[in-house]
Image 1 (cartoon, helix red, strand yellow):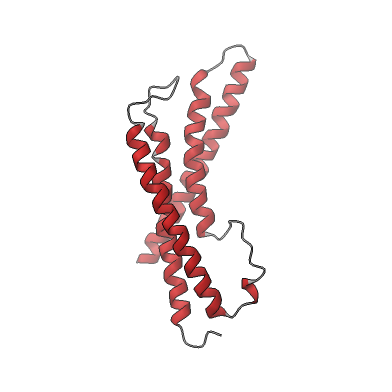
Image 2 (spheres, one colour; image 1 turned 90 degrees about the horizontal axis):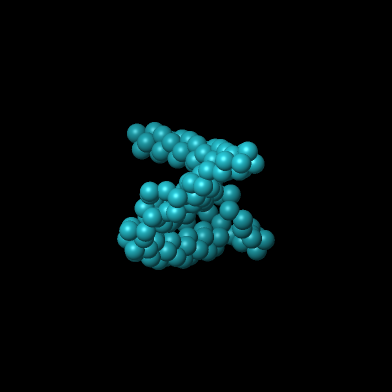
Length: 160
């Protein structure tokens, strides 16, 4: 049951991320074409930027979940499995602390920007800044599952 929920969530997150990226491309393209035609649409670039911020944080979670972030593992690949697991647990814990720190300040920033409007749009700027704590929360959840896997690997008998 939990795997079905996780699978549905992952498919939904990927769909939303892809949809937002398509939206960014459409709005930027539309702005360029309309500007070339002599009828610029001032709000389309700001709206594309709003979508892009969400793409960044949802995409960062996707990359984290799929281990697609850049990494230097030249030394750790040569270590025993259990030592590597301990190092990865420490690194995951440090990343989680950083994400919690950024997420808390992202919440404060979102409250601070709630009265500020996006230029050319009648939308609160907090719709942009709330992507930060939302993305951080999603990445912390992803890291909790990764941490669980590393701890299970570490406690598993037979790891070298």
